[in-house]
Amino acid sequence: MPRIVIKVGSGVLTENNTIAKERMRNLVSLIARLQDRYEVILVTSGAVASGYSALKLNREEQISKKVLASLGQPILMSSYKKKFDAYNISTSQILLTEEDFDSRKRTAIFTEIIDTLLTHNIVPIVNENDISTTSEQVFGDNDQLSAHVAHYTNADLLVILSDIDGYYDKNPKEHPDAMICKEVNSIPAEALCADHTPNNAFATGGIVTKLLAAQFLMERGQKMFLCNGYDLQDAQSYLLDGVHRSGTLFCS
Image (cartoon, rainbow, N blue to C red; front, side, top):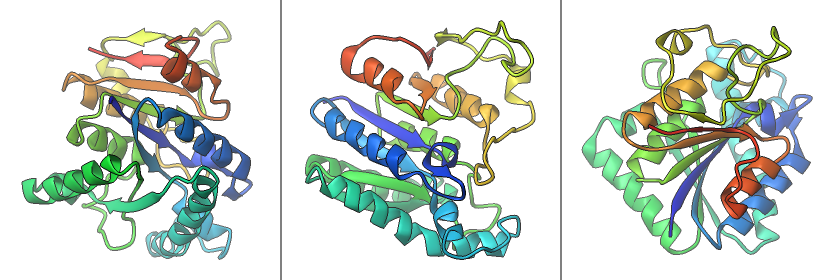
């Protein structure tokens, strides 16, 4: 059975400083349908936003962000559990740091855990461990984390559900005639060095981190699909119907 990693960011999962419950419900519904055809690993953001809904700390301060993550992670997982329970799907929480990918032994441990979970039809829900890490030990955004998870678990595809429809041939905010690139085989070096421009207060990435994730996978012969996460029709069409309506496929 093919294996996919689905990454959902804070821009999709949160609205007005809290979890967007309807979007989460739609995501879980899609994963439930995908399980008949794929092994699914979910990489999710949203812990800090969930914590902020309970305690209004300054999320710009590093220690406050860690406090919000520690408070919000169980809230986030509880929300997922309630929604997956409706489909009788069990979930597991896996928190990773960059160091987990630097050690063969640690990488082997978490990949074996994920393999075992998937064998038992349990959805692994992965997030970055923001709490105990230093700034040198974190990815800083879940786009990079999801690309590493996809690579080290030998996934066939990484799907990034974003607040944008795909990768455009030019900036759509500045050029009304910008078109989505449906397939990308190489990424210009300058695009990988541009400033990060997250659209959400709790987001840490932007288009650049998604391009870096795509570049990481393409260099290793793997694929990434970037599409809209507000409306999951493009993801559903591509993954379940084999129809590429919109969104961008990155492949070497």
